[in-house]
Image (tube, rainbow, N blue to C red; front, top):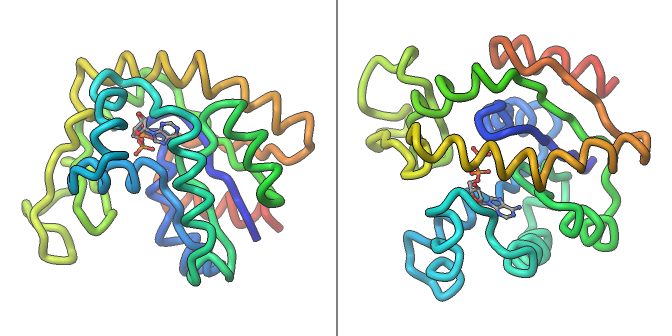
Length: 203
Ligand code: ADP
């Protein structure tokens, strides 16, 4: 199975990763995570991508598409994949349709007023987990590493990121609706409750 989880920044795409992996064996392919890893390691690609991420803009299509094509060759992807944060433009969606066949696209719909509190309160771990400060009991992630705030999870960065979503990513709703693949789910709720709805809708 190949799924796309799609939605505005903070809509909860990555939060469904452990559930989707456990239930369906899907590999979590998150372009944001791959880009941040490259930025941290100061690879040429990371240095290029940083210029865009720092402004709340999207990394160039050709860079991200190249990363995805490479990652799809990995062994863990054989059982199935869910794409988180990809595609984010029509260009990326069209390219993805050339590379592989997508079964379903889950759109997590969340009111923009909720996103700000979710994003600014989000703390992340190198292992890929995220947690909201409301639920944090310690500064440590379950894996033992220290949680941190992503550089783009600040109040001033939320606005440009949401604007980028509306301008460049929202047109994908119609694109996948026309393909008959879109499943829209209310993303305002508990992670586990939302996963129950995802399971039900996937059938
Ligand atoms: P969120 O969904 O919370 O915004 P991500 O980790 O998915 O976070 O993405 C962080 C940033 O990485 C985005 O704001 C964007 O700049 C960049 N990025 C991630 N995925 C893509 C993509 N598919 N195309 C272009 N840029 C991307």
